Every structure is written in structure tokens, then in C-alpha cells.
Figure 1 (tube, rainbow, N blue to C red):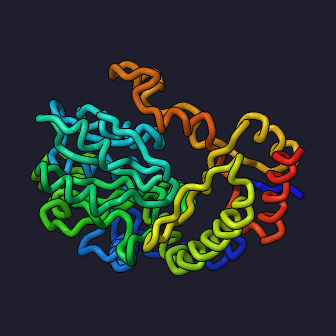
Figure 2 (figure 1 turned 135 degrees about the vertical axis):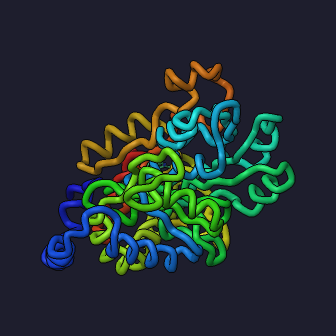
Length: 367
Ligand SMILES: *Cc1c(COP(=O)(O)O)cnc(C)c1O
């Protein structure tokens, strides 16, 4: 039984519906911003529950522009985790600020107590990541931020659909950044990103800055960039958004199946704690495993496309070391990097495929 990691070939079987939406777009000729993008932004704002949504070309742009909107730049420090995707830190560096890492906890999320230890006079913002589509303890992080008068900008790129007690990931801080990369729960036919905010000032800046700083065709009020979402992706996203709750539901069902099935292997496999009131989006289903390299070989031999997100923590990548970091600085992130495994758990897998994966892992440890 082959268990594929990617599901993109299956996801758009109803391609004709998308094509018919796109036909409407092409007839309208609205290829830069315009009514389709506006409709999408309104829909997404309703979905996450913020006053404003400004869509962007990528999730990375959403982070970069979000940092700019908060006035983060040269001389500032931004605190984030060493276990994330490169773009989290790339965005901080792109605005000229210095990334400062705080270790993660056993849930693979930034640890609020570790954040407090590295706050300095230069700290301008905390950038927690909703890593794997789960959420850090946002209330604690937000209290800490207000105690030290810092901004919170959330990297909710993998976490469309995640919630804490009904409140959407990406809506706890001043700014939340989301991605629609093909391997995120809400995905489009290429790239796309969104910034969610309740701040009118930030929203005004962002909608202008992402579009060359233009007030209208003949006037600008700032030097901006072109970071606009492609209307074709907004059209795809609108149809996707209608089905996102179902996708999150199935991913949660698959994750619960794994949690339950693997709970017998406590001796060898560690499942992160699932906090009460947290609904995870399960962009990634990650566990920690003994004899990781051997297990991976065994899974691949059995055609289960398991992966590692990621084998090298960000502070140990060459540009992380250039910041002055070294082995031993973040014991949790480093230990996890050697033990984590991502299992295929997407919405196009059957219960049998999930069970086959569980049985294969059991067979490996009982061998
Ligand atoms: C995917 C991702 C990004 C980047 O999003 P893109 O849309 O690919 O630019 C940033 N941060 C995290 C945590 C991500 O998972």
C-alpha cells in the first residue's frame, strides 16, 4: 500500500468548477487586485474574525509586510523559534532586523518562559509560529508582550483553520500572517498569502504599501512594493475556503487515529500534548521517535512517504551560526530535530492507509 505525502493530484478533481470561476475572472479582465481580490479578502476576514485582511503574493511577503507595518527595521530585535520554516527568520532579516531565538517546548511551539529570558532593550516584537498548524500558548505570549510593551506578529502561515477556544490562530497579536502555499491546509494553484489585523492604521499602510504606495494612478504617498496576490489565486482560494472546515475535520480525525494507534508505543514514540481548547490544523503530523533514521528507512521501504520538518534547526544553518549561535544553545529544538518524523496525514488518506502506517511503525519497534 503506497502512502503518498502529496495529495495535490487528487485535490482538484473538481477542476471544472475552478475553471468556470476562472472564466469569469478572465472575462472581467480584473488581473490586478480588483473585485475578486476584494471579495476574497472579505471572505477570509469573516473566516478568521478580523476587521481587515490584506492579501499578498506569498506568506513570506505577509510576514515581511507585517513587520514593516509594525515599524520593525534595522537596530530592532525580533524573538522567534529555531524550529520553523526558513521564511520566518528570512522575513525578520529582510526588514533589516535581528532574529533572536527562544527554544521550543515539547509541543514544538515557542516557549513563553524562554521568550522572557531573551527580551532586551532592542526587542521590538515577538514572532510566535503556529508550527505544524498547532498554536503556542498565545495568551501567555500576549501578556508578556504587553508587560514589556512589544508587538506580537504571528506566523500563522501553516495554521489556517487552527483555533484556541474558538479564536483563530493569527488573530491574537496585532498582525497575523497566513500562507496558501500548495502544502498548507488552505492551498491555491501556486503562491498566496494574507495578513489579518484589527488595526486600521496597519491595514491602511499595508493596502497601500503592497501596491507601490499608490493612492491612485497618479499619486503615491510612500515608496512601496508590488506584493499583490494574483487574482487567479484569490478565485481558487474562494472555492477552497468553502471546503476548509471539512479538510480540517478530516485532518483532525486522521490525527486522532494516529494518536490513539501510536499510544501503545509510549516507550519509543512521543506524541506532543494536545491542549484542551486548541483545535489544530495538522498541516504537519509530527511525532518524536527512537531510532529515527532506521524507522525512516523502514517506512520508505514500505512505501510510506514520511518526512522530517526539519533535520537542521534554523540557528545551526550557516546564516544562523553567523548570528553567533552554536550547538547546545537550544536543547529542545536540537534534540527534537534528531527525533522528529512527519507522517502523511492529509485529507485524501483512507482509514486503512492510516492504520497501515500505524501497523508498520508497530512492526518496526516490535521487530
Ligand atoms: C509556509 C510557511 C511560510 C512561508 O509561506 P510561503 O507562502 O511559502 O511564502 C512561513 N512560515 C511558516 C511557518 C510556513 O510554514
